[in-house]
Image 1: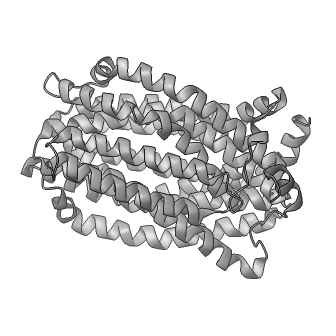
Image 2 (image 1 turned 180 degrees about the vertical axis):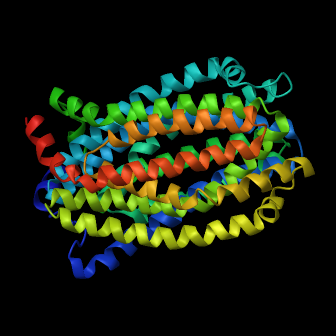
Length: 468
């Protein structure tokens, strides 16, 4: 049997079928598993919120919302690393350069695992100050800090998971990523229900949901990372982890820095945004959390299209088929417009009925229903934003999303929330109206960046700049 190094040299790279006449089939093969995977990803948080909602305690809902926000901030550097890795791996794979794809995959995994344990330890130690900083009331603080401490244990393997899954998708192996997510959902559902309600084990209540998340993320990470070494995947070998160069680190950082700045700035702004929501009271915060979970379940299919856009555009640019990439993006925008338009009507007409599944208090459900109706306005714009960002990142443009997101969220999300929710007294309805305006502006601005066509030249410029 040949070793992994000889395998990487001898075996041809199985790239996507980018012929124009087969484009619909390629898009379907990429998008369908990615859509299903992201639905499953959303389902993890949906199920967790559903279980917490049925515990019928507003403080638990608020605590889980704040702990989730803290994890959103902690995830930011690893999502940025995954974005840069996906961009390089997909374009290298499109060129037929397996060796470069594997070397960058190995470097990213090394960075992820080398830092994740330290992040988990620091986060565990600072859980209570973090939850307090996010605006928790004294009634919410104990549950929120304990819940976050448990979630921190999932970081050791859960943070590198962002990188490993992005590598699978960049190679075009979206089916593998989908089945790994299926496994995560099964583990999360079973473990959370068993531990929260004490099915055959001591009842852990609210904290059982957090332990279910830890078990699910750890299981998924072990399977995802291990699969990268398979010859049916990218064929990662231990020799790919040896002798990373300074040029490789610079190239990763060149792409990751704007993505990291985007994530950190958006997260910081989102923290301020959630502080504003928390100032409306615990009931409003709980209502907001339920509406966010229901909305995320709706837009995750389009997020799957964005994942497909990154892979297809990256490989098309690597193969010097930019016109195929442009045509594919237009096709995805048309599909998302129809799908999200239908969901917008559903949210507007039946928003209050949809949130009843959570079984929370009547006051919380009323607020969530109103928020979900307003959310119908933003769904198409949100979809366009995701697809444009995914396409630009695949081409190597990680800066446009930073510039657009920073300006729009400060002016429209934060400024709009203060104006509508507090100055005009609209409350939670003002929060969601401001958010809809933010998504509309972002979609329009990113369309401008994509339309200029500058992204078509970035790959060759980047290769020339970081030539070893």
